[in-house]
Amino acid sequence: MFDTMTFTKAGAAVCAALLIFLFSNWAADALYSTEMAEHGGGHGDESDDHGPTQGYVIASLEANDDAEEQEEVVEVSFEDVFAEADAGSGERVYNKCKACHKLDGSNGTGPYLDGVVGREVAAVDGFGYSDAMASFGGEWTPEVLQAFLENPRENMPGTKMSFAGLDDIEDRADLIAYLQEQ
Image (cartoon, rainbow, N blue to C red; front, side, top):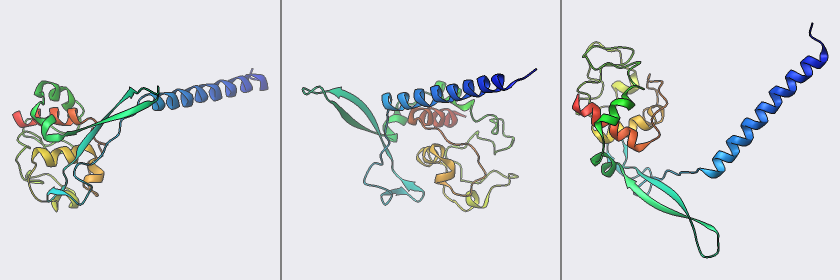
C-alpha cells in the first residue's frame, strides 16, 4: 500500500512547506519592523514603586535623497495614548481576558476585574494569589496595569497569570479605559 516513493514524496512536501514558511517569515520580518524603547533613559528611572515609565518608539521608513531608507523615530508615552483611549475598543480587547476573568464580581480562574482600576493589588477576598502578586503592593493604577499587561511574567516574576501580554500600547490603553468604566 505505502512504498518508499510515497514516503519520499510526503517528506519532500513537509520540507517544502517548512521552507516556504521560513522564507515568508524572514520576508515579513524584513518588511515590517517596529522597535520598542524605554522613555527616560532605562530601567533606573522609576515613576512609582513598580517599574519604569516607558515610552514606545514607532518606526517609519522614509527615503532620503540618496535613495537609502532612514528611520524616523517618534516616542509615544502611555499617558498620551491613554488620554485618547477608546473603551469600546477595549471591550473587544477584553475578549482575550474573559476566559479567566469575570466582570460580575465573581472569581474565575483569575480574580474578577470589575473595579480593578484603583483597587489595591491582590485585594480580592477569597482568591488565592501567587506570592509574587500578594507581595507586590500598591494599587492598580493605569500605569501599573499597562506595565503588567505588556508582559505579566517579566513585570511580576512568579505570577500565576499565564497570559503572554498585550504587545500593542493602544490595546492596553483601550482595555484599561474599558476596565475603568466597569
